[in-house]
Image (cartoon, rainbow, N blue to C red; front, side, top):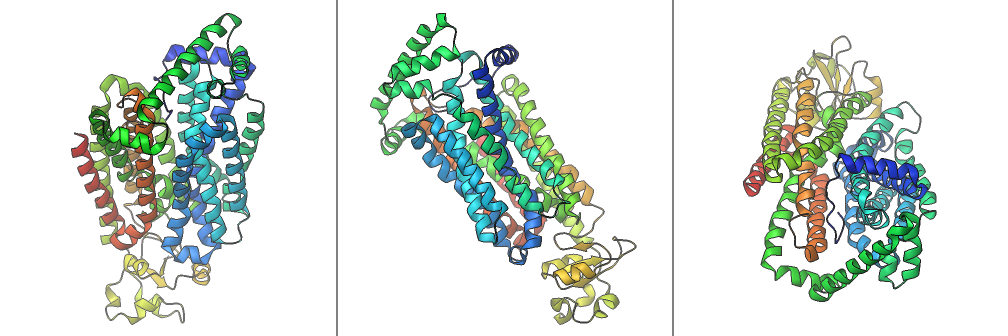
Length: 535
């Protein structure tokens, strides 16, 4: 989102022009590279936790046993994002776009290193908050800096590249997670390596100038002009200075009309009927986007794959690559269809696909639970001091299957020869995991339905990404009057991140209380309500 300006979707000609200009002008080359790194860092730091969490649980027993602690590790980055987005605009206006971007690089680097060397879960949470602050600030300042410091003919492409590489960064995080599964420090490498591109961007940023628009607003016209001379040919500088002057004067007139602080802007927006209607629509589509459950998939996809019966961390990460890759592909598909078929139609079609996939996933998990493997009574009872205590104490242990075993907080060890035959229900600890000669299950049960869950997870992403994934952000950039675009888009973005926080903070608790089937069915029901509002 860029305050005070509407960025049109770049066409093929603009991409070509951007490519030529970038290669010819070293300054633009550095700016484009900075845009790319910023987008990748944003995507990487939001996606990397999905794989890292699997190994954090292995190193810290309290994290493995406490669902709320896992949710806290994941969601505190989102809480940081809300804080970063809230102060990012003010810091950017007060200290300048360049200094704001430098600060985000420091936050990314320090946060990554704090997590990499964390001796306890509380330090991981602290690192996640710092990284979240960086993500929130960069979501506000990076597009703004690129928009103001690049030629008009290519700025749409550069900002779009920044957005596209966010999904690319998420896909990269899954690849890097997979690459470090065999190393001794696993999750520490996964989380810590983000410091490298952040430090590189910080060094790169030092060679870039301040935003000419921000300098002009600070009455530093000569300094702004000297920067424009680096960006434009000599015969275009005067025209750009006049355009800059007109734009800043218009912006100041808008501030005079609606106020220059948040409270005044909120009062002015709430008293305008057109803006109020825009906010109803803009906030509705943003909340509907998050309550479709998308970030449960992005943050917890390896865990969901394990719910489907794939016990191995490496297998879960490899299969999760599919969802991340399809999300990136869907973003490209959206660029092709969004103008051809319209915003509303694309969201409605997307919602129908999401609902069908969520209901299908519910049915698959329900069937998997119904046909879960039986507990081998003889083997389970013959292992002294190892049998699940809940299993021993229940009078109806003969009816127990794998799902009952896991719900009781125990582990299920499958048969050595065939994991789809009987297994044993044991206490959930590292000793029993190491003792198990078959496959050790603690998140989901072995099931022949498991591959269907992965297939419909892929269909879910394909339904979501081209429509509900991108269109809510486009809608919010278009529906507000120009002078209210910043405050309107900002309020909608905050509603999106708060909804994101609620979902990421409750998903594992929901699956524990309702089961995987019940949780996905709940999301499907919420999506039906979202569909009706959008319609």
